Image (tube, rainbow, N blue to C red; front, side):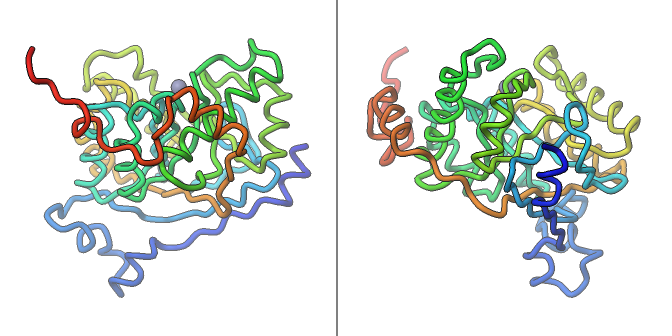
Length: 292
Ligand SMILES: [Zn+2]
C-alpha cells in the first residue's frame, strides 16, 4: 500500500508565485510583500501535493513523506468555521501575509458558509474533517463513508465548488478500511507532526508555549491547532510573531487536483441543512438581534 502510493506522489515546490512575480529579490519577500508589517512571516515555499492514491502526511501516523526542511512549518486549524474565533485566526494570518490549512467540519460549514467563504477568499487551503466529527473507528463502513462524503459535500456546497483533496480524521483515529476508501477517492490524509492539545487550554499563552516547545524539539513540522478554540484564536497573532522571531518559515500546501463531491451526498446535505446554502447570505444579513 505505502510503496504503491509512493510512486504516485509528487511534491513539487516553488517559491510563492506572488512573491516571485512581484519581486526579483525573494529573500526580502516577506517584508516587501506584506505592507504594514516588516516582520511578517509570509510564505517561504508553496508545495503542491499529487493526492493520487491517498498519501498520508504527519509523522504521528505516516512516515513515508518527510517533505519539510529544517525550520519549516505547516499551520493547520481544525473544527471551524466558527464565528469570532475563525475570523480572529484569519486576521492574524492576514497580518502576517501567511497561509494555513483549515480542516472543516461539514455541519459548521453548513451553519456558517459566509465564514468559510472568507477562509477561501484569503487563499487558504480548505480540507474536510467529516460531517459531524464522529470517531470513525467506532462506525460501520457505510456510516463512516456517509460522514466523510457528507463532510466533503457540505464544504463544497458552502464554497460553491470542488474541495481541496485533503482530509483529517476526527481525533486522529484512522480506521484502515476508511484509509483505503480515501485512497480510492485520491484524497490525502493529514495527521500531524505535533498536536498542540490546544483544546485543553484556556489561555492563549499556554497554546503558544505548547506549539513553540514542540517545534523547538522537532525543529520543523505540521502543527495541529483549532480555529474553533478561543485560546488559539486569541493567541494566533502572537504565535505568528514568535514563529517569525524563532526563524521558522511557513510552507503553504496546495492540492494538485480538487476532489469532486458525490451528487447523491450533495442532495442529502442540502436536505439536512434545509437547502439554500448555495445562495446563502451572511447570517448577520438574514438574522438580526433587535432585542436582548
Ligand atoms: Zn477535530
